[in-house]
Length: 355
Image 1 (cartoon, rainbow, N blue to C red):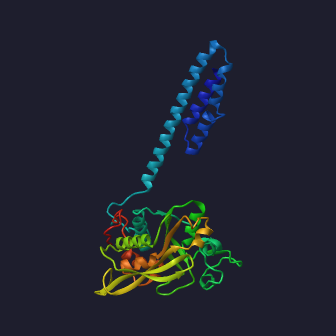
Image 2 (image 1 turned 90 degrees about the vertical axis):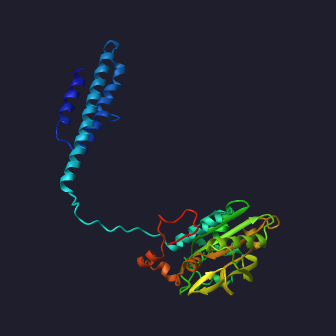
Image 3 (image 1 turned 90 degrees about the horizontal axis):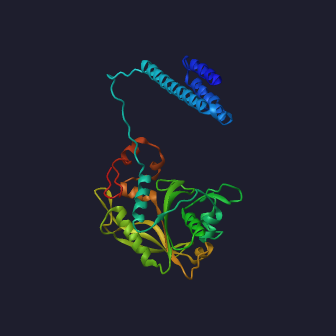
C-alpha cells in the first residue's frame, strides 16, 4: 500500500503543476501505458496473498480513477486555456465588408463526359477506363493496324522510347482490348478518356478527349449499331428527330466501317442539329473486325459486335456553341465562367441543361 500511496502523492503533485499538452500526454503514458506504473501494479495482484489482495485491488482502482479524473480535468483546462488565448489574439471585426465568394464551374468537357456516360448507362453500357500510356500491341497490333499504317508514324504518334514499344494512346480503343483480354463475352462498354496525337489547329489538339463504345454478343448486327447511335444522338442533342446517314469508310479494326453524318442548318448564326439539308460528320463506327476478336481470344464464329468512336470535345463544341477547340485547354477563367456549369444547378439526369 505504501508504494501505491507514493505513486499517488508523486503524480498528484505533478498534475497540479503548470503543464502543457505534450507533458500531460507523457504523464498519462507513464501511468497507464503498456508498461506504465499503474499497469505494472495491476500485474502484481496475482502475486499478493488472498487476505491482502481485495484491499490492494480496491485501493489501486480508487487511485487509478482519481488520477484519470485529474488527467481529464487537466486536458480540459489546457484546451480551454488555448481557446481563450486564441480568442484574445484573433479578433473579428464584424464591421468589415464580406469577402467575395467565388464558386467553381464544371468544365464543358467534364460535363459532356458525364452526359455521355449517363445516356449510355441508360441502355446497359458500363464505363471502363485504362492508362494513358499504352503499349504498341494494345494500341495498334491487337486492333488489326498493319505495321506500315500511317497512324504509326512519328508525326502522328507520341512514342516514349526508341524501340517504340511505349506510347501515349492515340485513341481509347486499347481499353476495349484490355477489357476483352481480361474478361469473357458478352461485352457492352464505353471508354471515355484522354487521347494524344501530334496535331494542333483550330479543330485539333495534341491532347483531346474521346469516347469509344463496344458491344460484343451473339447475333449483333449493323441494325443494333444504327439504333444505338440514333438513340444517343437524339438524347445528347435533345431533339425528337434526327437526320442521320452512314457513309462507307475504312478503319483497320472494323469491317464494314462507316462514318456517321447528322443533318443540320444554320439559324440565326447558330448550328441547329437535326434539321436542314447540310451534313456534319461526327463519328466513325463499324462491325468489329474478326481479326480483332481473334487477337483478344474471342471466337468470331460465335460472337460479333460493333464499335464506335466519338470526339467528346467536338460534341461539346457543337452542343454549347464553342468555336475553337484550343480554348478548352487555355485555362482562361473568364471563358470557363461563361461556358462552365454550376455544380449546384446541374440535374442528375442531364436533361434540359442550362448554364
